[in-house]
Length: 355
Image 1 (tube, rainbow, N blue to C red):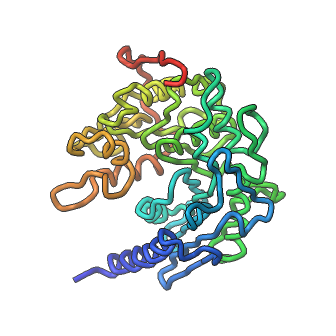
Image 2: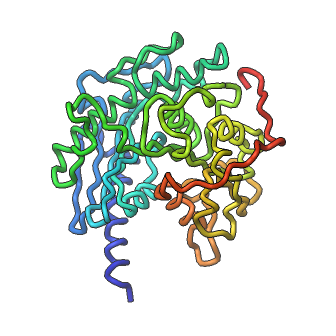
Image 3: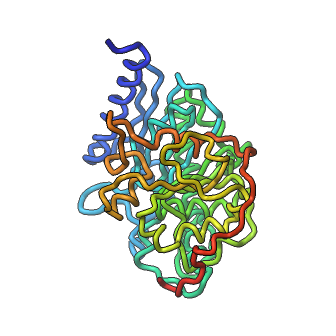
């Protein structure tokens, strides 16, 4: 027999997945949805182009509202009012991941996924060892910092997040989304925000946090930009607030992309690289975690394995192996750190421009 807690969790999961299916099918096009259920779960979706009239398309970098008749600017949100709320917002900078969002909500976070420029990566080539980082920063802030792209303020990740949170505060007043708005409502109060992402999104999250102080940064399968040097620039966000996690078969790991970024970000000051397999938190309070769990030798699966989903490895009972890792990455106290270690002599720092 299911316990009341498990039944509530199943109800929440089913409510969330029902909305997620609608998102995937494009059924919400032209129809913002803010959904509540009897358990306290709040989920929402809205198109960036509908909640902010200033929003614009930039097809030259693949930043559009629709493609092949399907909306591309859907933004998603979730919070569980029955969880012990932390008063922090997770801004997820990659494709919506319902399994991740469910976990973040259970930890007590409000969660949003804004629509922002990502497709430029395969179009805009770096001209020097800071150029790619400047494109990321313009995509994130909407500030004119890169000569290679023109992304107005209203179309930057920060303002798209601001407008989405304002909309949520009106649609779901009991969820207290307004607590994440700056006191003058000129933007988001980023000191209450965890910026997180996978792959490209983790790299942009880290670049944004170098410029703007945030509460925490979670970097799954990243950061990349292995031929860029922005990772060593002065940081508005203290380095102990950066947390990374990779699978050792991921090409970004075997190519020394992630280990290089982690070292340039200063994470060796907080403990060694820790293999989480068979361990329990707090992993020596390290900020650099890896796994060699079985992914069938598939590097592509390894890249996705560190996020909740079908690619992530499971134990003999079907439970996802990385449950304690995800909770650690998002909830471990940032003031609890490991002891500093020397740089890894096997981590290659020199990569050709454009590699």
